[in-house]
Length: 79
Image 1 (cartoon, rainbow, N blue to C red):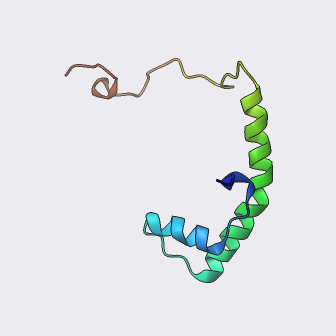
Image 2: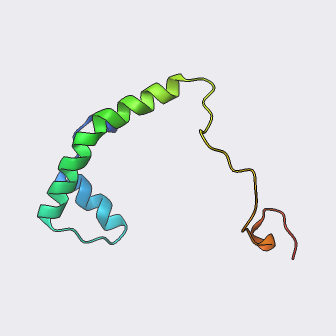
Image 3: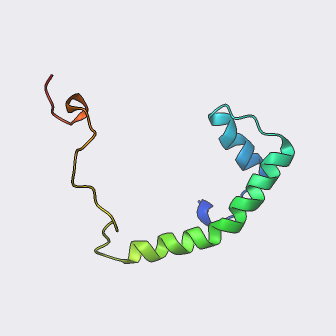
């Protein structure tokens, strides 16, 4: 099986993916999306590979507060 991350995206790939979410795209729009994503893929794969090599990766920001969350939205909350 080939590594999909390293291959170029085609118009057919884009249209098939868009169809999964009922997003109609013209051939011209699908071509532009495929071109743009294909240009981004090498850098995205390189970043993903680099991040996977870091053993103790932590988010730059953490959220330690529940301000603004309704009690019934909290996991395990009763009510």
